Image 1 (cartoon, one colour):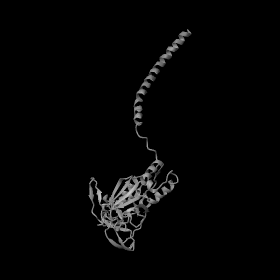
Image 2 (tube, helix red, strand yellow):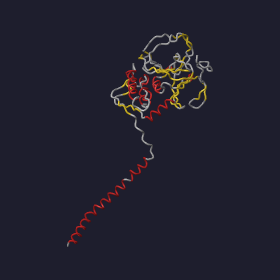
Image 3 (cartoon, one colour):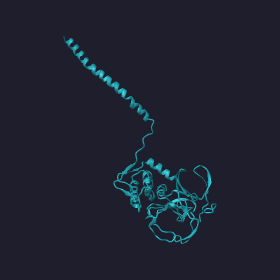
Length: 325
């Protein structure tokens, strides 16, 4: 009787377990079928490059930053992170690590705004970073790679071609049209003598940035801060850094700076300085930290975009001699 009772219990238990067994087996088969896709996807992901390392830090802006406050804001960041980051931090490094900021600065160009129907009297009031924008403080590997890139930069200016090129590791990164010095001599109050206005040639480095330049007419010494634009409208002189090179061991006051009259670009027009459009001057500044190599030359034979060798107009009528006196 006992055996029959045990047998009945076993049969009952088996009857209850079999449906569970088949249900579990079916579920396992279904899971096995489902896992095929993720496994295939994982195999495909193995062939992708590794994810980019995160930045050292991120800064989310809590207020708008105008051009008038830009340099103080960046100086504050440099002072903070130069003591925290495992590499030397500079204004140029931070901005180059956030290239959208250079784009934003370029778009403050008076003539770019004019094309959009916007008249701007004072660029110091223009917002270039807004509350909520994010600045990335690069990780050490990215920072050192970027610094090496900046260390390889050369500014190449060919006077009769009216071109300034930014080279990195020997390759042209950017080409900008410029204006150069006139082919004449003139008395300048700034030098207190009759001065040859031709842009001088030579090799050297960037030795100074003027981030808040004052404006003096070199012909009569008059200070001014208002300029008349090509469209005959008057504005305040824009706040855009001026750059000073030293050539052949000499600082002769020949600067690279923006012009408020871009119609003069592509001409021998200045008192010796190299003039650029405002947008181009912003990009140049952040590609030319102190110590950047500079070459100013007078080459009449050049290769054009089509690969043909052409001869340029001899704007100074004495192309064979270096203009360094």
